[in-house]
Image 1 (tube, rainbow over the protein chains, first blue to last red):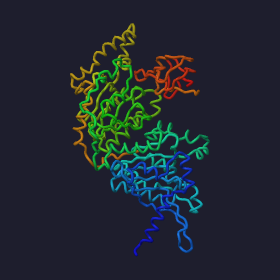
Image 2 (image 1 turned 90 degrees about the vertical axis):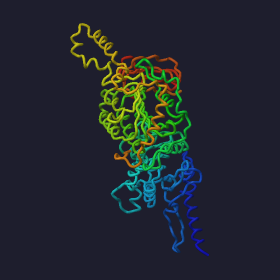
Image 3 (image 1 turned 60 degrees about the vertical axis):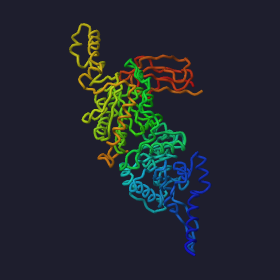
Image 4 (image 1 turned 45 degrees about the vertical axis):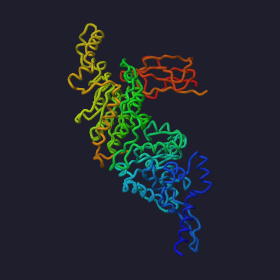
Length: 515
Length: 73
C-alpha cells in the first residue's frame, strides 16, 4: 500500500476542476455562442498535447472534520502544449467561474504562465474572456478593504514582448485588465459578434452619459479600424487557425531564427501580367495585394491589421520558404500616403520584424505623408517621425522595390539610406522631393506671376520638367541602382531571402518592442 | 431592403460622379472618383441596389469616412 488514496483524491480534484463553473454556467457560455476554455485550448493545440499546470488551484470549503465539501477551480486554465509540433504556453480565462474576474489563484497562475514563457523561451497564447483577472467591486465586501492597484505580472508581460511571440485572442467581452492583456501582444484577434474589446463596458460608460451597446462600444468594426486589434474573424476556430498560422512564421524566441517553411513554390516563377500591373496613366490605381500574391510564395501572404492605417499593408509571408516581413502601399487609400495611423502601424510592425529577425521586403509607392488640415490635426508628422526612427533602428536585412512613387520624407523612408541600397526599381518608378505637379507653383512663383499667361507658362514648365522624370536619367547617375523587368521581381526577391537568411542575427535587439 | 452608406476611404476632392439618384448599381461598381495625393481613387459600392441619394458633386472636398452615396440594397 502506497499513496494510492492521495492519487485518487488528486484525480477527483482534477475531475472537479474540469467541470469548470458547473453545468448551468457552461450552458450559458454555449448559449452565448462561445466555447468553454477547455474546448478552446483543445482546439488551439495539437490534439492531446495539453499539459496542464495548476489544475487543482482554486477555492475550497472544508467541513469541520476537514473533509472537502466544495471546490471552485481558479478561472484561469494554463499549461504547455504543442502547435505544429512546437511547444507553446497557453493560458485562458474561464468565464464560467465568476465571469473571469480576479480571485486568489488566478493572479499567480497568470504570472506563472508569463514567467514560464519567458524563462523557457516559448511563445505564449492568451485566450482572453471577461475582465481577464481584473477587479470587481465585490472584493470590497469580501476583503473588507480596498487596495492601491498594480498590474500583476506586468514585468513578465513586457519582457515577453522583447523575447517570445505573444498572441492575444479576444473570445468574449473583454474589458480593463483583460483588454490590456489582449493588446499587449504582437498579434491580436477578435471574433465578430462574440468579442468586444473596451476599457470599460456599457454600464460604466452609461455613468459618463453615453448609452451604447457592447457592439457599438467595442465591436469588431470599431476595434479593427482603431487598430486596437489586428484581425477580425468569423469564428473561434478561425481565431485559433490565425494564431497557429501567425506562429508558423516566427522563431520560438528571439534567441532562435524564424524557421524556413515548405519550399512549395517555384523561386523562378515569373508572372507575365506583372508587366502591366502598374497603369501607364499615373493617376490610375491598381491592386497591390495581387502583386504581392504574385511575387511571394503562393498562399503565404498573411496580412496583419488590414483595416487599420490602410494606406500601408503589413504582412508576414514567405520567399522560397523563408519567412519575411512585407511592407507595401495601397494606393486605394490616400493614394498610399502615410497617415498618422499608417505610421503607427508601420512603427509597430518594423519593431516586430526587427525583434524576430524577419528580413523586410518593401514594395514602395509612397507619394509622401498625407497632407492637409486633417492630417496635421492627427499629428501625422509626429507619428511619421516615429516610423522613421523604427526604420533607422531596424537591423534586419532589407530589400526595397520601387514600384511607382517615392516622394518626400515618407518616400525617402523606404529604406535606411546609410545601409547598402539593396534596391530595385520598376520602369514605372517616379520619385523626387516633390512631384512636378505640386512643386511648380512653389518653385517658379515669381516667374509665373510675371508671365503674360500664367496658366500657359505653367503647362510649358510642367512639360519641360516632366522630361527629366524618366527613371533612366536617375539610373544614368547611379542614383537608383537597378531598373528591372517587373516579371523578374519574384526570382530576385527569392535570391534576396536566401542571401539574407545567414545574415540574420539571433538575440534580443537594442530597441525592445512596444505594443 | 436596407439602406447602405458608401463612405469615402480617403479625404480629397470629388472628380467624377458616374451615377445619380434612382440608378441601379451592381456590387463592385465604381460610382465616384476622388482625387487624393494626385491619384484618382475609384469608390465602388459593396452592395447591389438602387441609389437613393448622392451627397456630393464634382469639385466637393470630402473627408475620410464621409457618406458619399446612399443605396437601398
